[in-house]
Image (cartoon, rainbow, N blue to C red; front, side, top):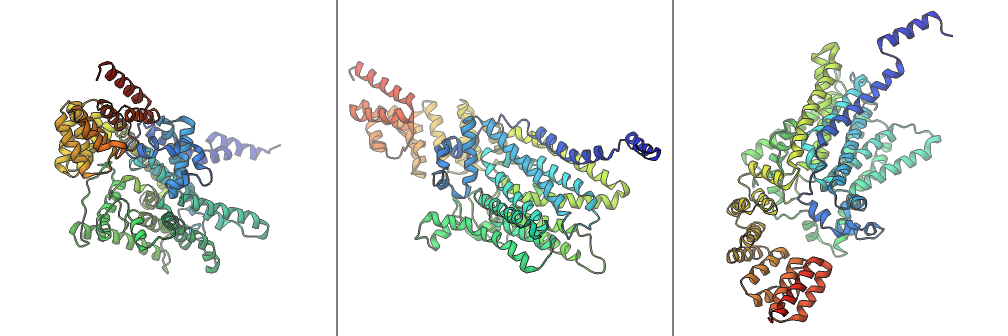
Length: 613
């Protein structure tokens, strides 16, 4: 039985609401509860969003993800995009559960994003337990610093493109595996190395390697992440260098997975020319030109992280052709100063006799993380689009880690004894504001009309947003509104084959058949491999009673591939010309591709026969 003194202490604790167990539970629970609630609020309007952009080719029209058997060992699911096969497997699982209902894909994307935020929390908290940081003046507040970093990461509107744009699960899931690998590595390195735990340590390291391989098999951005792990080893851990290098060597060796796979897909005869082609993505831009362009692009990414105004699915970022261009040189100088700051901070933590608090190393690591993880997409590997917001998703982890630690130092310096409360209060207030901005940004992603309407207003001098807005209006049967946007797209870029195609489609709807023919001929001249354009070109020829030209253009299925409309229009021309056997062949093809069009063509042939042709 407790004595009078113990009873008084217990009563006082209960009176003050500081019962040890309840207090510990509250300290542990509030970061997770806050994180989940704010993230769900920010993305609560994302579940009804439609498929957009590459969602159509990668998910909606991709037969590979529609059968899980394609992902059995050696299946086509691993051959289509081998370095992204893990992400495509998750799309196949989504399809198996719910078909093409977008909500299910959005739910999974949000779950991945929430998991990443929790991993950011775990990572930052774990860093304060490492040998170099455990004596930091901030270590007592590690949980709060980790919570602020995680909640800012989760609610920032710049993440919407990696979360709400379904196919960019490729990016967010690769980030999951990268974060898991780093957290696992730190836990493994700090675990006791006694002989009694040898089997457990081997199993733990095997899991670490597996996670790293999964990252490499989800998206190519994981290529440089072993270097990030090496930086954490250098800055936060200790031990003999032989042991440290032995721990890192297998992870660094994993960097070979991506390039080796890409070369293997080219076959045994791969040469330097293949390497050149494989290290560019649908772009003929010179490598130095691309590098010069990426300096201002990275500054734009940083600006959007600091002040997320002017987000755009299609930024109008100019292509630069010289490293000496004023915008390029100024951006390069700013980025160089950031790198110099990271080096300076790291060196000052080792200075004598008055070193900086060792937690400053997390700011230096955050800067290094940002640049290292941007290397794949923002260096000398030309990509058709020089800027896309989802490319900042993995790099942003370093930014939020550095920002949270920096904010804690500022609060400690200026808020005195109330620094912890001020820091947490400011962090959560900012997260709430960011969550509101994210909710608003998700409204833009709700449909092609809202997405491309926003982009066209923000990039009025760029052809693609005008064209895509016109296509979205046309799909909504608003061709009168679509026409000026498509014409603007052609005016801005006369070589835009898709804009000429869309203009042809609109003119067909408006029964302007001769004009439609002219636009569609321009589209196929600019892009000879364009099945949909050929299908509509055949429709225009048929409307002008030029059936022989239709047969000459796409007879035998040339140019139209699996286009149901193309085979239907070819069948109409064949039937009118009296080639009934060939027309019936098109009906058989359509019975597989588009059964409704097969019935329509058969009925058309019956009508011709009834009219005596």
